[in-house]
Amino acid sequence: MISFVLGALFASIAIWLAYNRKIRQFKLVEEEKQMLEQEKHIVVDFMHNMVEAVIEDGTRNEMFQRIIHAAVLSTDAMSACIFEKQAGDTLKGVAIEGLFPPQRKINAEIGHKAGTRTQHIEAILRSESFNLGEGLIGSVAQSRKGLLIADAVLDPRVIQHDDPALKIRSMIVVPVVFRGDLVAVLAIANPCDGLPFNQTDFSLAESLAEQVGLAVYNSDAMKIQIEKGKLDLDLELASNIQSLLLPRNLPDTHDVEFAAHYTAAQKIGGDLYDVFKLEDDKIGVAIADVSGKGIAASIVMAICQTNLHHLSKSNDSPANILKAINSEMHASMRRDMFITMVYAVIDVKNGSVTLARAGHELPLRYSCNQTGGNLVQQIQSGGIAIGMVPPEIFDPSITDTTVDFNMGDALLLYTDGVTESVNLKGEEFSSKRLIDTLCASGHNNAETILNAVITNIERFSGEAGQADDLTLITIKHC
Image (cartoon, rainbow, N blue to C red; front, side, top):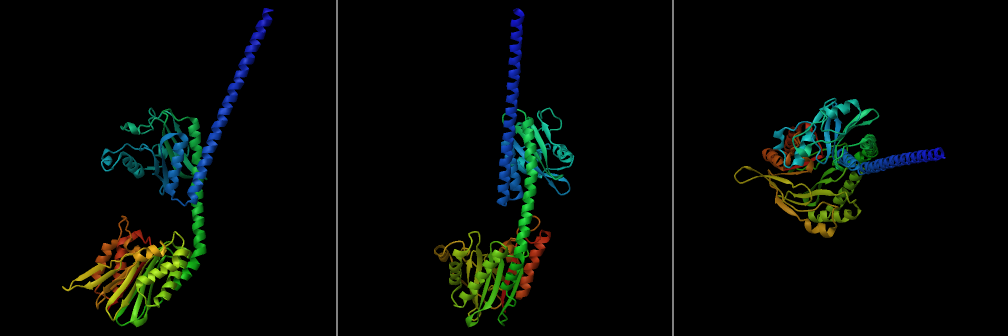
């Protein structure tokens, strides 16, 4: 009887243990399923975020910023940084979230050059570059294998700083690879809860890194395809339209010389100039810059020029003509498009120029002052770009400005590509340099003045090249 009871008791205990083991296994499976489901949701949300970034046509750095933001949120980390692979097999910090610790010992002298601590750290991270195999970042890039450093305090591979805020307690570093090509390295530091990163965090970071590689590739491929498609469809049509807009010959008069220059930054630009004869021996001169490029910009500019030619026959004032053009075009123009413009009427008989300006660059006038010196002035005139606002707002802003235009005087009209030309240092050519150039060359004929401006811009820009369309008209009263 006792043996039977003991046997039953042991059997019950065995069944209870087996049941509890099954329960624990079931809970572990459920927890693993929940973790996988959580990881799946995070990755899906991340890819949705990346698709939005591609659709919104953000920059590469903006995409990387979204990536590290997603990495920080999904791992509940305090900071992260992406080091993008550059030419020459180096890696450079391009996007930072939080106070991510620099991966080299901080040079104390650098700190004095920064404003806040965050700016200081960001400046250091963006200035850092690592060769393959150098430090944790370079090692992961070279091996293409991620690292989970749960306890970073005791790991000699981890750079530690004197600043407690930059102490690395735990760290994940994973490569971003697509089709065997290294794209970047993602580094994540310090969970917010103070605990070390675990295998789940590491697995999630690796999953995100895989999706990052795909997202970057898709972004690059989509942008290349979009640009190629746009160019293939637009270039021929836009080129034909634009070639019809620019005057083949400038008016030939005994009293006034004209010279014009136009160079597009791309194959198709958004600038326009025109010179045409009016009644009473007057001459109309226009220069304009439409926002955007391609076929849409060319069509908008063609409509603008057609309106200008039609309306200028009325011999009305420049201000009234610009008002009429805006009235004709405002309702039909896209919201993201507008035209800046100067329209001037040269009256040689009366020795004057009357002009109106719709948000364009201020024209320059060269003249000889009474002491025999050279004087260059900006012709001040207010105005809003065409197409931006309805007539009730546009019209009061546009007024005529009349200045003397005597023998020996010169007039220079130009687009913002002239003053905003940059050199390798990022400095702009500026209105001041343009004024100085006109002051030194204004006594020459129109062609010589034009060449002097172009030469000075090219010398200033050097190898930086031309970022925007370059359009100038020089007018000389001879």
